[in-house]
Image 1 (tube, rainbow, N blue to C red):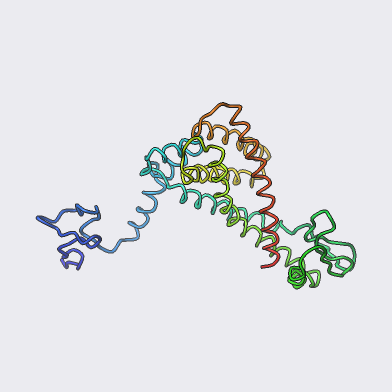
Image 2: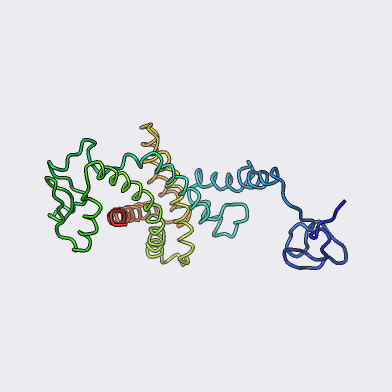
Length: 293
């Protein structure tokens, strides 16, 4: 039988530790197998599915805690028990990516910013942006208008809107797709702000900012799972997801931070207000970015 260079090596190919006094199955320094060979297709499937999606895998253990024990996943992480669970950032990115892809597939074609299918630019007025005080941009009786905004912004927007009706419809669909694509990055930017708010509110707990960030990642991962329910056409599922947001958040805060129920309700109310204002500002910024770029 032919011996590969890795098999014949006298030291670990990963860390370089010598195989002395005898060659073992696993390197005593780093734990890698000492007999390395090209993987088969079956081994690829086993490595991926067995380690990540098996009933004993990290993903299912993580989802079990995330779904049924609000805040427990954060407690386990902060207590140092991390080996058997998906790391917070990886969990958030995985769930948010799936949710945003499904959102884009199911909703992108429906985000047309109010432009009717039988659009006639020569009649009527169509606002693409409107801020309620006369500031805005759109088309009126076939003429582009832009009021109360910087000249460079108006000119750039005009190049996108000053087209024929079919072209404007296509631009509206493309705008919807860009908006949904940019929302993922925008929501990711909300995480540090959310963690900073937790740090400020729970300053007396003595936790580091990164520990609050772990809680924010877990909580937002759960919220993205609820978004999958909101995409369902079943009204009862959407209602269940809407109800689950405050209940889950309340229970998660209790398990991680403690405190009386009144204090937690007050914190949730203030947090909801700040978060709603932040999300509203963020969405406006995303719309403007999607319009211009």
